[in-house]
Each structure stands twice: as structure tokens, then as C-alpha cells.
Image 1 (cartoon, rainbow, N blue to C red):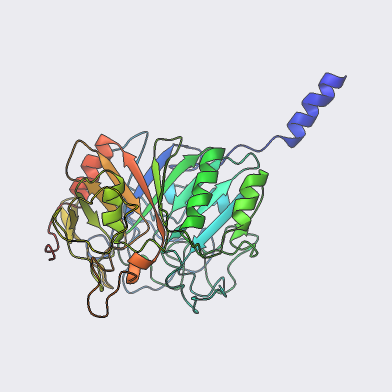
Image 2: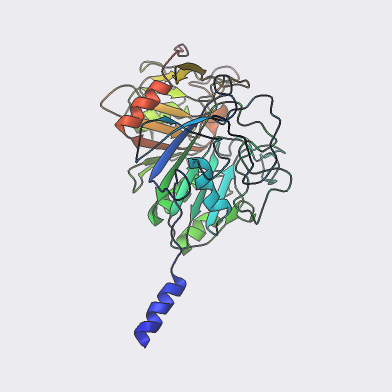
Length: 410
């Protein structure tokens, strides 16, 4: 009798299965990567697909948009053309994975430095549309069950997602990619999701706190706190600006390496990543716009630096064009159909097969000059980077961003 009661109690209080990255509904993977193409070469959705706004909102009459995409996962790390409209249904990696948060009953945190007023963020340094330095330049969502197991979703889109639950919808806008008022699908974007154990969720939350991400634990639209006590404590401490100057680097149980840059570490972001990886050269495609950080060689002086970064950075080459499916794609930052807001990089020297997926643009300063200080733009902001070591994905992402480069600065 006592054994039966024990088994019943265990079942009653057992945590529901953990959410995780999905390629489509019912197809779990350990990680996936999505590159949403820009609207010049790949307008609209793939084939005859049309947007249906599964997670709320109305189809927007954007002048230009693209929800065509390429994707890969740990099960098949070769980049392949996706079908449909990315993020719009449960039949693509982004939509299927987000659906677990929005239409599930999991715990979640959503963060975005550009919520565009819904939800309203009343923190110092935040305006009606966005939050500026020293708040982190980061966007994404984290979901976990009551055992503390789940996944993280890195996104690069302003104003999406901005709600973690269909029971707490946005009040003034939609919450489906392609169905929000801001045309955040005109330019290229990237998305990444990786499965997390309980210790990984703790590591990600510590990284988010270190990077000063914009969220509000008191607002149920973007935070549902629960699960293990240590996780709840970390979640409750989010939404504050970190005073840390210490970059963190930790390997998750999946083998993916997580790097967290704090805002107070006022260094050029991608040179910092190179140094933390031991100094390999990188090729980077990000929102490369004013104030631009030029391409650098290993010999380029970087005076905005910190002695805690013991290795010197290798060369960092800024990609300005790439190619997909035989078509050239623009990779500069800016508003227009041939521009890019993804933040992706690959190693180009040494015996490495690293693919780096970041939150941060290559904007700021290498050295203080005139009105430019070491706190300029992204130097003075926080953000996360995920580093994957996969030869097949590396080869395809290298090809995706292969093309012209910004000149090397002095």
C-alpha cells in the first residue's frame, strides 16, 4: 500500500517532459540553426505559401519582406532550403519550437532590447521603442519545465517575440513573425536553438544576467518563473544592469560553448570572441553600419582592450556579400532589401571548424579617437555568443558568407 502511494505521489508531482528544439512539430533535435534570407533575392515565402499569423497578429502589408530560409540541425548539419514561411506555423523549426512556449504551460523568459513599446519597459535608458547602452543588445527566449530542463532560442528580430504565452498576448501588436507592425523580415536574420539540461539553464540565466538583457520578471507577458529554487532566484534577478566586467565562457552539455559579454567590458565584440577562442582569424557577417568597426588583421592595433582577455585577437574580416542557391546576398547593415541583421561568424585560420552565432553587431571602436570612445555602440553593450564545432555546418556557413569584404582599417 505504501509503495503504491509513493508511486502515485511520484507521478503526481513529476515534471512534464522537457521542451526542446524541434525541426517541426513532433521532431526533436539537440540544436538547429536557421538563416532567414533577405528580400532582394528571396522575396516572400517559399513556393506558394502565405502567412497565416499562427501566434497572433495580422498579415502586414510590408513593402518588402522575406520569410524564405535555410536550416540545419545536429541530425543533418548540411544547410538546406526550407519550405513555407519561417516562424509562421508549426511546420518549420522556428514556429514549431516557439509554439511550445506560446501554447504550452512551461516556464519562460523572453528578452529583447527592441520590444517597440509592447510590453512597455520602464527602465532607465529605455525609450518607447528600445533600450540603449548599457543594456544588452540581445534577443531571445528561454523555456524550461519544473525540473529545470528545456531550451534556449536566440533570435535577431526586433519586436519578436514579445510574449511568451497565448494567455498573455501583446496588447497592441501581433506575436507571429511576419505579422508584427515592424518590418523585421525585410533584411536577413538568424535564429538558433539548443537543448538544455538543468545545469545548462542555470548557465544561460547567469549569462543573461551578465549581459544585462532587457526583460522584466514582474511582467507575466514575458516571464513565467518556476521550477527549481536556484533557477527561480536567477530569473528574479534579471532585468537589472550588471556591474560585471568579466566575460564568461562555459561549455554546455550539448558541446555548444556559451560566451557572455558584459556591457562594462568595453571592447569590440568579435575581436573579443576571437581572443576567447585562442586567437583564430574570423569572417563575420553582422549588422555592419555606422559606427562601423573595419576589418582587422592580426597586426591591427586594438587599444579598446582589457587585460583580462589574455590572448590577442586574430584577424576579423567583415563579410559584405555572400551567396545562397547561386544568388548573391548582401551582408552589410542598413535598411533595404539587400541588407543583413544576422550575426554569424566562422573561423578562417587554425585547425578549427567553429560556427559562431551572436547577439552583437560589429559596431563601435577599435581605439578611442575624437568623439569615439571605447564605450561606443556595441563595445558598451552586452550580449551572448554560441559556438558550435561541426565540420559540415562550418563548410556550409563558410560558403554562405563567402564573398566581398570590408577593407582593413588602420
